[in-house]
Length: 153
Length: 200
Image 1 (tube, rainbow over the protein chains, first blue to last red):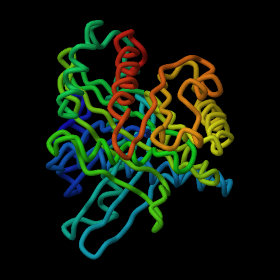
Image 2: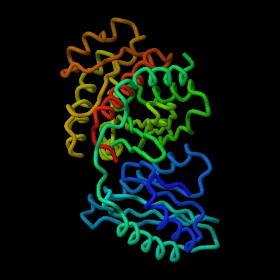
Image 3: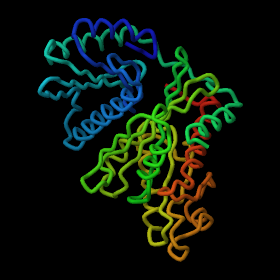
Image 4: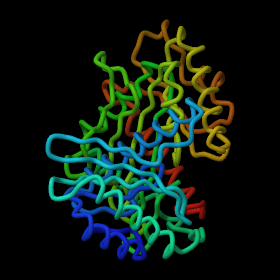
């Protein structure tokens, strides 16, 4: 399990233990990864987050077009694995959870413990992070060196 | 909005390639994908139609390396350029830290460029973002075509680049200008972070 901020870890660990989920990903509504469990490659995490956020965004837009309240969750059932996707509000903004589960779990279990995790996250979440300077003003040289390496120039 | 993890010292930024249909947005990402070592990039995800037109978006995660002590990642997205895919275009723009506007240099596509630029402005406003506050660079693609078919970067600047932002002539199929464009938008996005703009 890997979380950007320590306060996410305990609720997520409880969810993982109780739901037996294979893969779990928490992300912002723009697809930025907040926490993950079960992925082996960082790049796969980012791709899954981009796709999960896109599914939720298009589902929200469909609800808006149909003039119905937003769909809070959706699920897909495959031959061996199920996928559960749900959006929720936190003091840090709207987040999305993506959960992949196998035959040792079920959609009902995942939904139940996901709701508990969301309640725990909302309880322990600190307020919005203060903004501040992140990079030094002399970052351009490092950026150019990184890009040259990236493109083999 | 950039995601900054102070504990793990990581920065993740979202850059969206925007522009009219067939201007070369996907070609930019394909060229980058082909040139960047495998260990520094993820799989390129393309949600496209059978005719290879972008349906929802293309996505390419890149590992830039360590900058000012932060492991820096860029997530590159394209939008579908066709006019009738505006709903998905707007969704992809959400949370963008920077935009590359890829214009088609062909003279006959001038109106399409202008329409797409206006559409970008409207869609950003829909997310509560003023285009003047967002890092943006222009890329004038297809500069390799015969000169009687295209407008020069100077002419396109005069016609489209009202704010005088950085612009780059390019030929994405051969890769000319792709690297320079990415460097340009990267600098602007990171400069904004260095200046202390909001982070998530």
